[in-house]
Length: 319
Ligand code: UDP
Ligand code: MG
Image (cartoon, rainbow, N blue to C red; front, side, top):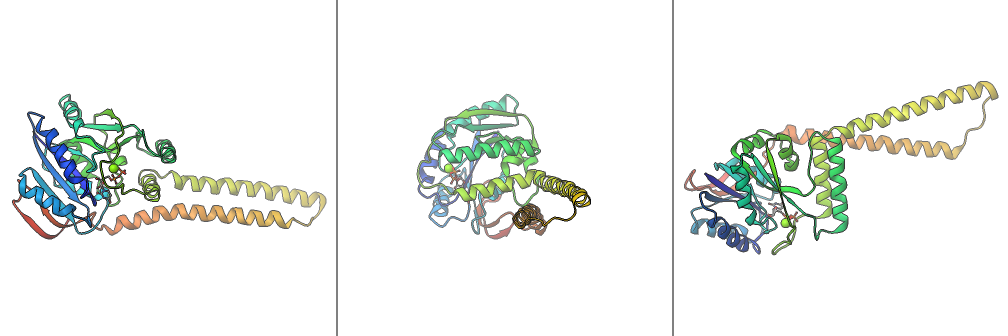
């Protein structure tokens, strides 16, 4: 059985040697499997690619794909899953926040007959505000979407061939992996681990980026916001109709009175705001349709070395 470790790397020169050392040592101690490393350099500006080249020169089990620019972690994972030929693939971060020590228990789960084994991290040491927003996001997402996401379940998981092929069969361009993994289903085993700090370097995720990612996730797996817009429209129309009736009856009974200026302005502002909000929601989906329909490639490869398939493969290539 072949197991590929899939590692997206974006400006990870500081931590990559540490990762390699620990991951390589860990998998060497697991008997009975053949391990390969598939690194994806996501358009790093530092020495990440140079380090990967050296590793690939020295070690037959190391392959890498290098993007022409930064396409994001989702693209990196998709590229690696598309290229791996292994029976099992496990996705790990390069910063050692995903302990390679969990690979052995994950393989154990695979042997038990599971198709996927997901590592659930605790939120120990995370900023309080971020944890709060994450909790709320998961609650909202689970209520309004067709997928169930688990707080703390990230991309750190092992999958068998059946599951990898299913994940790849979802062909959307803007990919929200947490949702995709949940959407495809299959037998999943969860194992927990304590949150660990990044070994070196800095996180690539800002709060704004995370917020944008959460919105992407919602629009990718739920049409609830659109229904909510329609629902609000319905409520306001109903209220307006009732108010109209009241006005007509009042006018018949006590004649026309001079309406208030403040209430008129307040209503105009309120309705204007609601209309813009709904337009914005529709716009989000429109934007999503627009990016999907262009069918642009999820990533572009600048250089790659994939062992066991072709001995050497270089130069620009589309995928
Ligand atoms: N990463 C990537 N492309 C990006 C951003 C991040 O491939 O545009 C990789 C990064 O190198 C790391 C993993 O995704 O291996 C997780 O990133 P990071 O540790 O910065 O995120 P955090 O752990 O803070 O959520
Ligand atoms: Mg990290």
